[in-house]
Image (cartoon, rainbow, N blue to C red; front, side):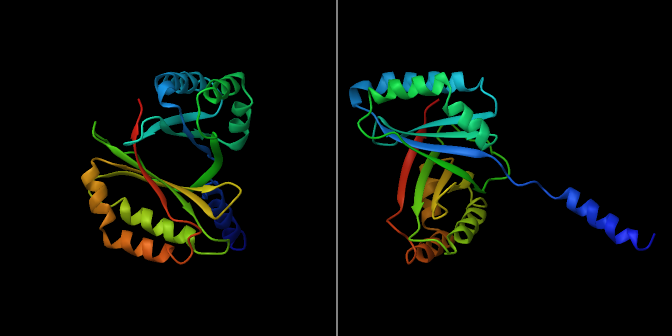
Length: 222
């Protein structure tokens, strides 16, 4: 029995381990002709509502860049890659892309992502909440960018006014990341930008960045 006890303990501990996060994401950017803005918003909302019926759907978030009407970002969250792929092949997804293709000025830039660091639970926001979505491009593989971003996200979640600070990593290119921030007000964003941990993050990132930070302010489209 004494010999079996360590084995039993080990088995229990292994069984209690948290399974890997299989959540799959899609992050897309598209610029729409100004005259087609209203039609595009309607098309995206219809696509989002129809997608809720698909297996593995978690949510589709729809943003418009502040100060730049008709510049949209669409973030999809699915249970796993299989559900995302199945959805992408659906008539709903194909029909949506056909509608958008007739309105867009840019390519429909859509990329697959996986979880790097997520907020533990959503916090209550307000009608004035503001979003910052950033694309982080690292110069090459083998850097500590993931650790730098995890450290930033952990510190930023403790700031007053922060509602969300999530970091996604490209599913196939490990040197690309998307950072999704939600704040109660734009003033909270300004305070965050001046915080010591934010400055340290930018200083650490500068030598390994493959391009300047693509950091943009967005508002959610309900």
